[in-house]
Length: 234
Image (cartoon, rainbow, N blue to C red; front, side, top):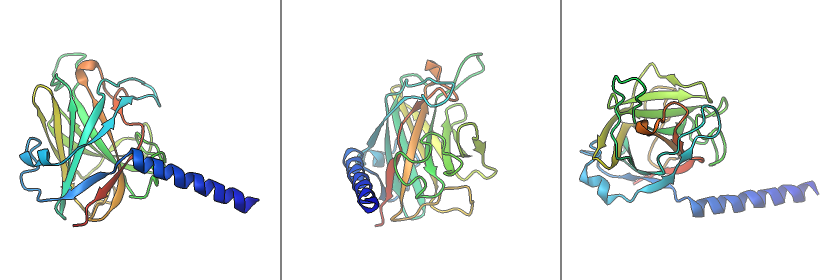
């Protein structure tokens, strides 16, 4: 009986994995020259089909809220040495969080498990900020600085800025929305950085803040699941 139950559970997991693969195509980090691609408006990006990730308001921990941005498009390339991820979303207002009291800035972030197999599936580990058993590496862009922050988290309330900042970013707002290019070397010698390489399979999640709609801190537009990422080998 115990063996039959184990086989049944294994079958359910297998079927569930098949449905996830069918419903959520992986984000392919294409092997391509990266020269010029750090410009979010570079023509190269138009030749790469995006993966659209639906977003929703954050509903796991207070302060709840967000959901102003319906979806974000993700594109990515690497040249064997450097990876570049492009996030794009609709937002007609450019909010750079000036000195005015009560104003908030636009921002966007991409998150990876610190260990590629952790979490081992799209529903495992905390999908927003990791957990104590699944530390995450977060790259966050802020419109007020037009720069990236290299961060780690091990659950809600644990977000920390790294001593070393290995990630760079550049943003572009065209009156209709944002394009943000993040880039970093595939491998670093920082133990708190997610490490990449040709042929790697890992996971990714995204979050966006729309400042003019009052989104800040935990009030944000989020994806409620992890998304498979595959680095093209050749």
